[in-house]
Every structure is written in structure tokens, then in C-alpha cells.
Length: 255
Image (cartoon, rainbow, N blue to C red; front, side, top):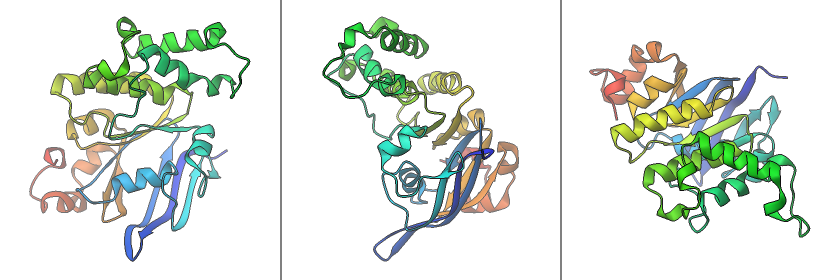
């Protein structure tokens, strides 16, 4: 078994004649929290879409727990232990908080499509959904329709859905975008708690979140990973400073 939860090997992606990802290489060790940062248009979201199977790679390889997932459909990758969130909240707006979480745990507990199972009779599903609901702090909102939650609550619910299936590798795409500072601080603590013993890869623009949460920071510029190191080393990396603000300001002050 590979020591890396996730590996990108010379990954490339072109849309027509435009090469967006240009030979990206990255290794994420089991249990690490890695933040992907980079200027706007660097290819961060495209990279996330390649890893999760939303886009197919043009060349190279992507390994999950040492096994290639290149060419697999998103649901196949999910069943191999990788789950992701999106920039735009992706929940069932007409279902309650509890119903959203109950849907999310079914597959991981061995339940498949069936006309013979009554959802209300599945005690293990109920217990798991209730436990996650408590962890994300939404027990009091159990029966509230998800579309009526505040923005921060919806993001918390999406994080709960993302981890509910038991995936070992979690991808979060801008999890604190649009939040106030207090909401962002609460989200960071929630992410820290919900990803214990899991591998986390996230795209994030808020540098206080990045430097406060990540074990390592991967910097993407023009479709390449130009550096992947500890926050302390990234802070003083001249190539990273140049990529952001011409080398004149600390990286943590960049947007």
C-alpha cells in the first residue's frame, strides 16, 4: 500500500488548443492537510475537477491509495474513498438537514438501491446521521429544510455530507468563501474536527485559513505546482512571492 493517499504524476489537461494544466505533480501523504493556493486562473479548480473525475485528464496519471483513478467516473472514485465539496453549495435544498445526512450515509453502510428497505427502519443509518448532525452543530436544525439554513449552516451541512460516506480523502473547494471572519473561524474548527485521521486537500483563497489549517501548501501557477512545502517555508519562498505580488509582500497577505 502506498504511503501517499493521493498522487498526481505529470498531469496535463487541455481544452482544445489551450493547455490549462501543464504537467502537475503532487504527493499527499496519508493524514496530511494540504491547501492549494495560486493566482486567479492558475488552474486550481480544474485540478480539483480532474482529481474528482469531473474532467478527464489529457495525459499523466492520478493515483488514489496507490491505484490509478484516471478515466473513472466521479461515483466510482467516490466509492474508492474520495469525496469532495464544491465552490457553490451542493445540497438537497428541499430535504431537511437530517434527510440530507441520511441520504449521504446509505451507500457507506452497505445499502444499495432497493424497493424492500424502509428508510425509517434502518437504525444504523439513523444513528450515523444523528451523530454527524451533532458533530457539525446542526442538531437543533434537524427538521429545517436545507434551503432555509443560513449560508454558514449550509456550508457546515455540505461538509457533513462530504465526510458522511466515510471517505478517507476529502476535497474541499473554497470551504470558507463568502463567510464573515467569525463564520470562517468556526468553519476552520469544524473542518479540523471533521477531518481528524483523514487526508484533506482544499482550495482556499483566505490566507489566514490556509496558514492556520494546512500542514503543507501547494502553490499552482499557470497549471504547474511550483512549490509544495510547510507554511513556514512557503512564506519565505521567493518563487511563490514572485508569483503573487512580484516578491514585495508576504504570501499570507495575498488574496
